[in-house]
Image (cartoon, rainbow, N blue to C red; front, side, top):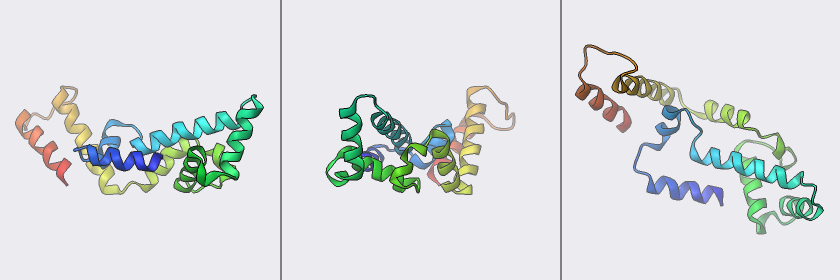
Length: 145
């Protein structure tokens, strides 16, 4: 389900994906999808429609291995170290905390340097001792680390 999409996306993407999210200031794709999935499952569980809420509860607690909803709930809870009963306590804020805590210091430092060099390249910052070519080359080398 979500996990399989992340594997497919990573195999199709030729960029250094570990740096893409921190440089752009966004969540990694898998975590963004998980965030939407958690919100959707929560909406189903809290639905005023009895059929929808009953099916969602069944999918999560009884038919988990046969249901995309149950499998995604199990994946999200495992990824963010929560019990199934605590699924609705997973928020975008807690996902951000998980991402930041699991990111290595070297990735954070590299992403910060790349972000600053992109600011120079875009004209929002100045680094008078380097030419545009040197800035491009430095960004290229950092992305290959």
